[in-house]
Image (cartoon, rainbow, N blue to C red; front, side, top):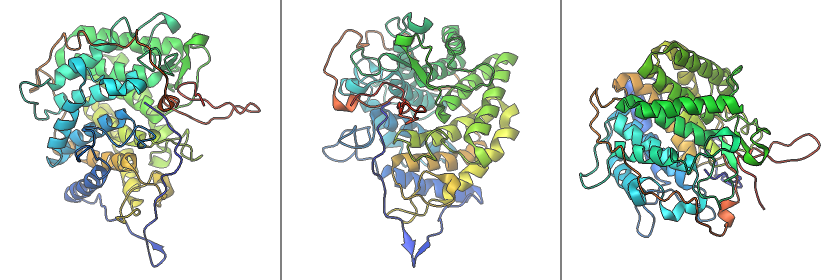
Length: 459
């Protein structure tokens, strides 16, 4: 994903007589949660222009400088709306979800549309693949029979990422951050890219029972530990490293979605295997994640939030944590008593600060502050929507299905065959490429003033 520095997303704070407006949202009952989620979903969709004349279907405005959002974020937004539909029963946006996710599949139905090649990372592709997997698992309405199906789309993404073209001997294996070798960031191996692959593999294994997927998931976990991106003692997950240093100079910035994506994948592996090894991994990741990213019981993006350096991308991570940790309580029920109270506290804090913007109810980013922070955007709304709607996960009674437990999506083991992995194509590097990977952390080394990021930034 592209990581651009958040320059200016300050909106006018809604005030009445000089005092802050009270939030219109409530978590006091299931009906109140549904109504709140409905409003949040509508507010989020006001940032989507793809269904307007002259705009591009399926994406949010961007990439910079055309708008603040990179291609991947819309993919994540559609998964948020699939969960919203599954948990609330509101199908208001299903047509937009269907249209968007089918429009962006690209040649060979592997979510690699040529128009995003200049900024295409394994994580970008992975988020769209995980959205398709969510559609299959939640029994989202199937596409028309002449269109690619949800399970096949997820398989296509996985198959292209499992290709030998994507895995090389540098750093002993693992996926690079970028896909085309000419892209800035190709020489960086990122935890989130490998996390998407691990997560998708674990879920495809549970859905299909095909052990090829579990082998890849296990190998990816082992590689993450072996290279030191996943600390086997503490269960911290670090951002990544450059292949030029054989991944020895690890960027130890921590982001919540790295913890969440591996914790969820481990929960899928546990749910399928019932292996105590995976149960222990889930427990350790969840315990670490709650302690680190929910201080005081409220989600905080610790690496950038207090410093005010979070990018547009980073603003979305809290919502992923809420959605993914909610799923974990279903897949690994022994975690529910630990996770649920924290997510409830965090969701309450999230809606409390939704008092700003033009509507007087738009959400900011700093939930723990207790007040609206003056920022608006699709990421802010998406994160709060995820926090609120996931409070209904147990009420809805919908757990991820498999092919043997009610799944309705058709797969294709050969999906993605013939897809161009862009490994042998060159192109000019554009200004839009010269941005960070998971991070643009803006961590300064003492005395050096070195800026770290998920890729080496230029200009």
